[in-house]
Image (tube, rainbow, N blue to C red; front, side):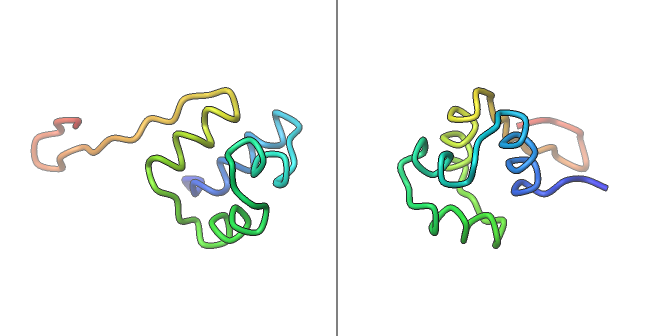
Length: 72
């Protein structure tokens, strides 16, 4: 079973020893706003990139065409 984006962020937060409030501060948003996004598992690509940078990693977002296997 694949992890959701929010679950991946929570896993990385634990590995980095960060609280939700600390991650919110590092990404320039309120704790409540980030908590809401985590609950909905709803992040824009830009938000995911910013969160990844704050967690010291890189987010890679791509699409794979089902008929040809081409990665975009």
